Length: 163
Image (cartoon, rainbow, N blue to C red; front, side, top):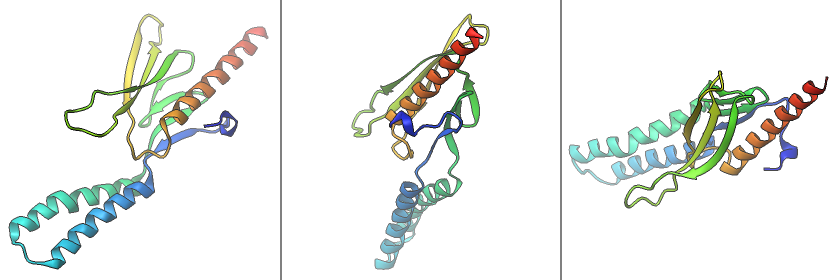
């Protein structure tokens, strides 16, 4: 993401992609209803259809409707699921990493590794935040936003020290 598109006075937010969640949910529910309309397969198959298609489909549709902010980055700090993790004065680093794959999995499991100091600067914390394939911002955009707001904070601190 181009840093010129970021605004120092606005929040950079990461949410679940509404379009992706609606699409997956609708496809799962449609597959269930199409398969039920094609033939009578017995109660066992109906229950399997509910378990494997309707419940996940409803979950994706509900997630698209709810669409909460997962990550918020602004000039005051870094937030995850509504909770402030760190401000920029205590921030140390952020990096992308890949979580170990499970055997047979084709999914990339990217995580954001955030390191920051405790409020008394005596200890360092490390937080790993899973990044999903259904988020509305790319991993690179998140790192760019962190760099952007961190640099803004560092520039403001230097200007305050001069005064």
